[in-house]
Image (cartoon, rainbow, N blue to C red):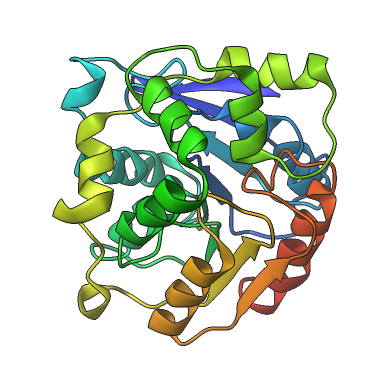
Length: 268
């Protein structure tokens, strides 16, 4: 693993051993409450071993990236500019892989530029977070309370993190390691994803898209993934037996294998 600075943005990079199998790099974009670290655990080494130059960005206010103002000052547009800033410094135009909020950032980025391919993992749909929030209020009120505590800088019960991200077994030690790395999210970005700055599909470039979700995702349930897929005219691939944190779940490799099988059919 190599930790790089792209200006004042944190980027974790992994290079393939030997000659890359593909000239298109991969840029991974995390979701709310996390940072580039969530890709470092499994996905970066997996895709580097598969021959890809891999980069994971910590958006402004996350991880070790810039904090030019309060976290709540950062918007989805700021996060899109972060992606654009990193893309300009990569050796080639990357395929984008975004999880949750990162998937919405990918959609917003496609309003301004094209990429060879895009993967949306448990992504906020173009219709925004409202449907998901209403579902949580009725079906998982304790979970939405925990998420609000994290949003406001509080410390919810670690079981709330388990319920939010995982369906499969996870050790207490591993859960607590992830728990310590999680952080608050920008209220402004949450409101942008709920109502004020939703993707505009009519303005977007339309690269090949792989749209994936998880059977037991409480945050972006399969019905929300289906909305994204229908908007872009793509099938929805729902991974059985998994929760929202697909890149950290016990069966993460099944998700990685699905992406790795799809990418070569789309990019060189």
